[in-house]
Image (cartoon, rainbow, N blue to C red; front, side, top):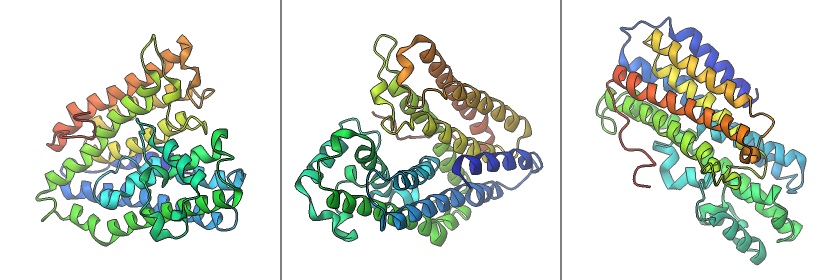
Length: 342
């Protein structure tokens, strides 16, 4: 099932079932639902799509291949849906950064990719060697440059470009499978039954709540805010994945995935669930109004800018509701997040 369809269907299932949960439900049941209905299926989708991409790349690896680009896109969709789950197994050995080095505020990926392609680095020869390469050339964004930026099309000969695509695809599949395996073998149980890593159910719920609020902030400030820039100086070239025309798509996928998590966390409060559903619906409607501008290149136009600013305000509203109402229901606070200190 395509990722957006799966997320939409799951969100509908969650919305239809959460109201049936008793307000007196045990707290551990809430963590169980998030693990089994959101975390494990999301990482399973990433593992499946990445494996399909890696398998295809062994026989069809040309950067210009439509099939290769489609498989890369499907795997990339799955990563965006999982990107907010940045704790535990995804942080081991820099797996998340190896999968997706973003935001790349210092333009490390184009520099590292140019060096790798022009020098025909032998690091692509084996999975073990490629695992030692810079994270700037090991994930989805490096392939976006190769696939969609003409400046990189002729830097390496076709055979080397093919070997690089295969190396990245294998690495993506390996890291995705390792994250899922760690969740299934150990980490899910640690979250379900707090003992050592999480000393209480409240600490476990704090981790899940932080994933929601941190990535609502990242969605508003980075995926939306970076291209917005200022009114006098918009920055459309800072839009994520603009070369492949995926900027808006990533916003929509993350909205769907964060909706899924938010509704599961609010499952013991029917009024809050309904409120969250309404504001996520509003954000989806505003995102849909930008559908003719997938790379967000049009935000230099005041009308398009207004639409994107409205969507950003929707996300801020969702975060405010989460902090004010959902946090108090769970008895937790947002805590430290990935943007603090930047």
